[in-house]
Image (cartoon, rainbow, N blue to C red; front, side, top):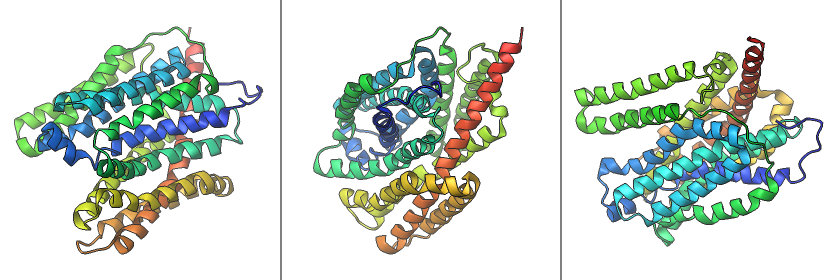
Amino acid sequence: MSDPSAPPAPRRWTALTLIALAQFMVIMDTSIIGVALPEMRSALDFSPEGLSWVFNAYVIAFGGLLLLGGRLSDLLGAKRVFAAGWTVLAAGSLLAGLAGTAWAELVGRAVQGAGSALIAPAALTLLMTLFGPRPAELPKAFALYGAAAPAGGTAGVFLGGLITQYASWEWVFWINIPVALAVLAATPSVMPAAEARRGSIDWLGAVTVTAGLAVTVLAVVRAPEAGWGSARTWLALAAGLLLIAAFVLLQSRRREPLMRLGIWRSPNLAGANLAQLLMAAAWIPMWFFLNLYLQQVLGLGAFASGAALLPMTAAIMLMMIVLAPRLIARFGPKPLIATGLAALAAGMYWLSLARPDGSFAVDVLPASLLAAIGMSLAFIPFLGAALLALLGALTALLTLRNRTP
């Protein structure tokens, strides 16, 4: 981390814009394909169950390789890994858009996920390098970074509808390429450099956790067809969980693991990460099924259903960037977390009451805005708590390691 007494980086806010854009694009790539899936199924001859892997291939590669991306960022320097991630993302996007078969499409999506797994941890490292030593600016930086995630998920649905209706499904992937080129052009001049350092990379751990996630998801996706009571389903689930358990065992024995298990002894870190996991588990399915409700129940077109979600995006940006930092400074994080989770739960419950003969103004708009406000109030305090707890845990581990003869 930077020296607190050093002068601030003159272009740190420009750098923060690129960091937030990275977060926006990483999350957007999970949602932008939703509206395009029917056209992709027809063009590439996907089976109904195989179509879900257009989403799963990205998420599994992203989640499984995220720890590896963080380790590479630590060893090679966040700036280098950030640029490498955008290069890989652009290559995967080109391949996914040019794919003529289902398998080529899935390979392209996996490459996209691998690129995002390099971008995300490097972006967060760059944020902490630029703003960590400046507590007065850190909440605002967190707010912009935090707002980019749910805004990317929501905006992805809108852009997916716009592109699918007025261009073609290939452009939901190709849209990443000019963005990647612009970021790569700006990165050398605005991002802080860091010296590379020596260390080992746990490649076996990265392969094990990624394979464990893939096998577990495969078991769940195929369970409706094979049956939840079938031996094939339970054997696949057992294999996936064994691979994940093997990853944990590997991390406990490595001198330089991908994930130091000792950090989870911090209750604040464990609680904040669990809360963010649950919020993501609520938020991502919400916009997915909300888009289906708008199109298949209310009869809106791809563009109109995407536009209907713009009020949520506007509310998120306003709350996270403008209001949340001020509210945290005045009331502290705990009241905002409690209020935000309550509002998010209330918005979700309200959406669950949507009627088959309902309307956007009555059944969707007020409930989605309430959910957006709840997410905005809770996300920033949880993110800050997780990062502060992580820094404290890592400091304690390094201190203990240095004292050990």
